[in-house]
Amino acid sequence: MTPEDSWPAHEQATEPTAVPHAEPVMAMLQEHIPLSLILDLAVPGGPASHELLEAEGLPEQEWWTPA
Image (cartoon, rainbow, N blue to C red; front, side):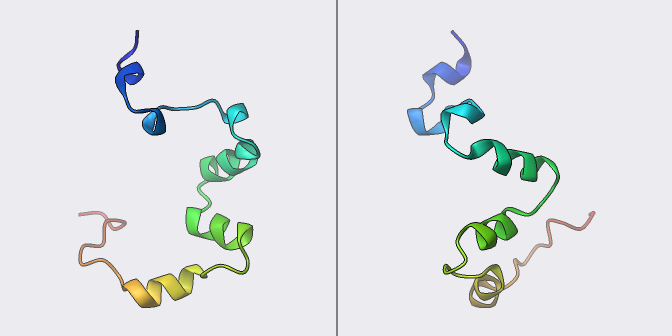
């Protein structure tokens, strides 16, 4: 038994083949393509990432810059 076995089902890792079309998405994430860009491409009619940024604004702490 692994520690992950005690996690709720929605938090347990799945094999990429267990989720349809997961392999191309995982490959793009491994190439450091931003998830927001993948979502923009996957759901062209949905809210665009630039619209989300305008609505939500930048975070107070810029986590992407070195401290």
